[in-house]
Image (cartoon, rainbow, N blue to C red; front, side):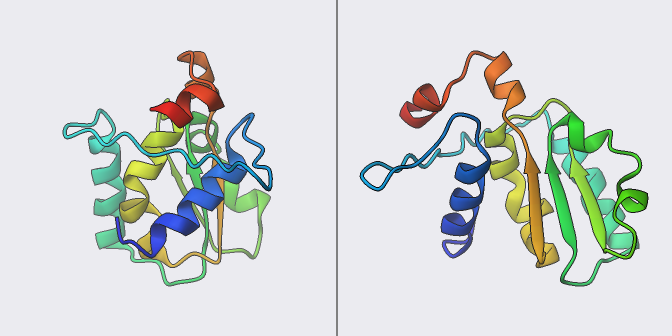
Length: 134
């Protein structure tokens, strides 16, 4: 991940993470768990293959996250006139979104990024406190 994108992504994900409310004295920034052979690699490769066929210009609204985003089949109809891009994948956790952001978010130079993730983290027993320690 490029050093310049980390603070932006950390701030974005921190703002969207369930149960994480930074105070003036304490700010928890979750660190991604990067796996060598991620279960999401096939999904990410499909996004990259689609991009080779139809490359999007900068300024889109990129929706990224877990299955709630992936299964949003009416995204374009729900946001008429906006260049939207769905990059939701499976039962991903927030760390998975961070892990692949350089490949499925940053290249689009989005105007806005909408993140929905965290419910799978909670289902796996994660909390903001345990995530901050990992």
